[in-house]
Image 1 (cartoon, rainbow, N blue to C red):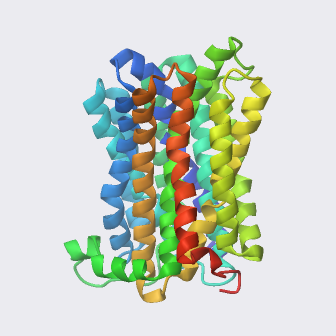
Image 2: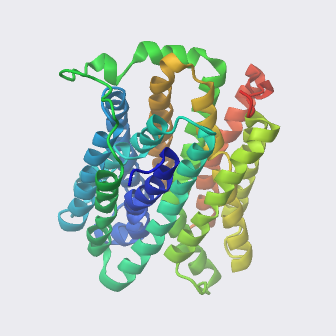
Image 3: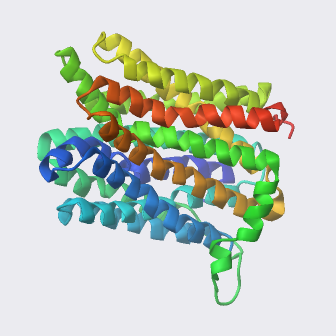
Amino acid sequence: MRLKPSGYTPLMLMAQTCALLGFACYAVVLTTLQDEWHLSNLQSGLIASAFFFGYMLMVPLATALTDRIDAKKVYLVGGLSATCGLLGMGLFAYNFWTALIFMALNGVGLAGTYMPGLKILSDRIKTGELTRHIAFYTAFFGIGTGFSYLCSGWILDSLGWRYVFGIIALGPFTALLIVLLFIPALTHEKWHGPIRIRLHDIFPVDKWRLVLQDKTASGFIFGYTVHSIELFASRSWIVAFFGFCAIVTGDPFLLTATTLAGLINFFGVPASIIGNEIALRIGRQKWIFFVMLSSAAFGVALALSTGQSWWLIIALAVGHAIFIMADSSTLTAGLVISAKDNIKGAAMGLHSLMGFGGGLLGPAIFGFVLDLTGSRASQISWVWAYAAVVVWGVLFIFYERRNGWFSGSITSKS
C-alpha cells in the first residue's frame, strides 16, 4: 500500500536514527584509543574532526546530485559508505593515520544520508507545514546520537572497541534497507539523459555568493556554523569529560560515562522541536540570541563544576545539551524558509557544508586547547577548552547585532 507523503516522515526518522548509530562510536572509545595508540589530545581531536572532514568533502557533490537525481539514490550510496567506514575502523584501523581514513569515510556516509534524507522529505511533502517535518528530522539527530552513545558504551564494556565499530556498522546498513525497500522512487525523474556533474555544480560559487548577499539567509548559515563548533566539540569530548569528573570526585556516578552521555543527549530532541515552536511565535532571531548566550553560560559552568556534586554536574550537562540543541531546528528551518527558490538547493548545501565545517573545527580546537593549557587531567584545561568552543556563539551574536540581523522578523508567516 502506497503511503501518504506525510507517512514518509516516520520512516525517514527511523532511517536517520539507524544511520547515526555510528556517530558517537569514536567519542566513546576516544580515551581507550588515546591510551592504546599513545595519542595526544590534539591527535584525538583530529580523528574526531576527520569524520566531519569526510562529510565536507562529500556534501557539495551529494547536494548537487540531489538537484539532478532522486535523493533516494544518493542516500543508498551514503548508507553503504558509512557501513564500510565503520567496518574499516573495526577491522583494519591500528594507528592515528588509518583512523583518519576510516573516520573520513564514515563522514562521507553521513553526507550521503543526512541532507539527502531531508531532500527525500522535501521532494515528497508538498502540503502542510514543512518546517515541522524539518524540525522533527533535525531533532532526531539527537535520537540517533543518543542511541549511538548508549549502544557503543554497552558494546565497549562487553566486547572491546573493535566490536563497537563492527557491530554498529549494522546501523547505517539498516538505514539503507529502510530507504531501499519502503521509500518509493519519485514518479518523474528530475533529470533526463546522461548526468554531467561539473566542478561548478559541486561548488556553485556564484549561487553561494548570492546566498551570502542575502543578510537573512547568511545569518542563519553563520549561526549554524558556530552552533556546530560547540555542538560537535561537546559531543566528541563529553564521555572523556565525565571520566575526568569521576576521577576528581573520587566517586563514579551510578551510570557509566557513556550511558550518561547518551541519556543527556536525548534532552536535545524535545529542546529542538519545542525551540522551533517558540521561535515561530517570538521570532527566530530573538530565540537564537537567547539560546546562544544561555548555551555559552551553561558550557562554562559545566566545565567549572568538576569536583562538585554529581547532581550539579548532571544538571549543568542537561542544561547545556538543551540549549545547544534549542536553536538547531530554528537555524535550519529559518534557512530553508528564507532562501529564495532559485538558490534554495545551493543554500541548503552551503548551510550543511559550513555547519559541518564547524563540526570539523570544534573537536580539534577543544583537543588543542587541552594540550595548550595543560592536559585532560587538569580542571583549568577543561574550562579553557569549553570556553574556546562556546565563545564563537557569543562573538556571532555581537557581530550580527551590529549588522542588524537580530532585528529581523522571520516568523511563522514568513
